[in-house]
Image: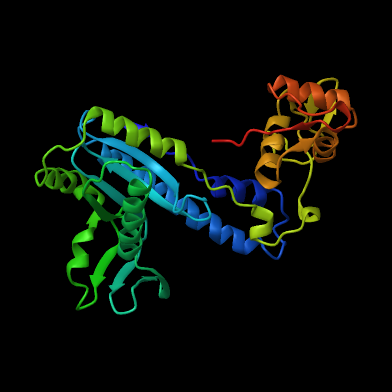
Length: 324
């Protein structure tokens, strides 16, 4: 049973909105494209995992996607788990990788080298990564006074076209690397090693804590890539031809390029604002972004989205919803 569904990473959504609102000639544009491609590939790999997770008995396993939990009680640091499979007698942490090309796992330098199209890239060893996450989860369980259970860690390679090679002394770490098609068998094999130790009450308590303490990663995208606010293209996009800005006439958005009319083209623009800038936001700030002159018009648009202001009238702010 899926207890925490997968959502598209917030950074991926932010990169998408940011790239749409930058000129392709912007000095950071190529870097953003590379980052977007990397995060997109990672997300596709996690989605590809779903097909094989369905092979697990729905009544025996609880599945949590994309958990981000505090490493300390003060929430100064966090650790992330791509997928956690919880059973009454054990739990499995999955680190999901969607790498194509030739993959070389190097024990000596604790890294993985990927060769693709004649280009070499190095990454941290994913086995070491997920083993460290296991240590963090053990500490998290103790800190929250939750039952201790055996924890296992696996690296799941979702791209069937990748070719794997191990360094001569990679040793026992190799058992932690599997293909997606082997996932269900591996988890079921682990289940034969243990007797049930968690009651339904224990599972419910752990589930509640996991969901309560999970915090979605919400980076300041402009600060991350050192991009100025003045570089952002403002206005509302045409939902048909993507022209920007389109103008508002008598409660309707009208595109001067293709003449299409839209009642709700502003929603995407407001979502872009929420993803790119910090909250909360004032009426006049959104008006400038959407190229709207009337404060009443802006107020009505926000009201139509069930968004209400908070604070004194002359300095009221809105908290914009972050897309899932």
